[in-house]
Length: 310
Image (cartoon, rainbow, N blue to C red):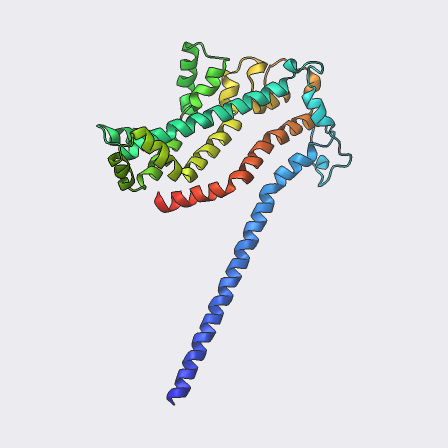
């Protein structure tokens, strides 16, 4: 009787394990199917953006123009975009100037954010000085202020400095980021202080500790700060459009908007071509796609670090 009872118990345990395993596999299939559907749904606008950039659309876009494959694909929109307004010398081609401006306000603030945010994060996390908690609290409090509220005093400051329509007005507001300081502080705070104490005993300076210990151990968070800074700079639209008063100071996104009649930048009416605008939008999307595929490993690591240590 005892043997029969043990066998029944083992059979019940095996059935329970099999049902649990089937439920787990079914859950995985549903999860992967949902993620795949969501991924395809998210990629559809990007796909149509690239496909329509090879179509001759003219000045209007209707549902009938949207096709899964262009009927007469050509590079004409891209060629016309780069020959816009001045086909003979490069200085007067606005698209190249807009690309240069976009690259400038994406790269320079990215470098400055990596430097200043990491230094501020190290100071707030590991250095002892009066008012440190108050300063960090003020940094966190500024994260709750909507960005658009700061535009008016910031514009007034740029006006008083006579920086309107200059690269200083485009670059200065992005030299440091509150979110980057917060992330760096939270990440550096989780590092053991014994490493820094040991370095101080070995006569290492604070700069040496920061450069040789803190930065190498903060690579995932630095990657997150760098990627988000680059994305914010490259996709910036409103502030560059607000402080730019000439066509030469526009970034690519604002320049493409001006081609659709959103601004008085002196472009001729013939440039109001949606095919050229979509070609420009495709060019604007390419750097972000490259950045994502190059640094996706660091993005995942940074999110994991934030989730575990934050």
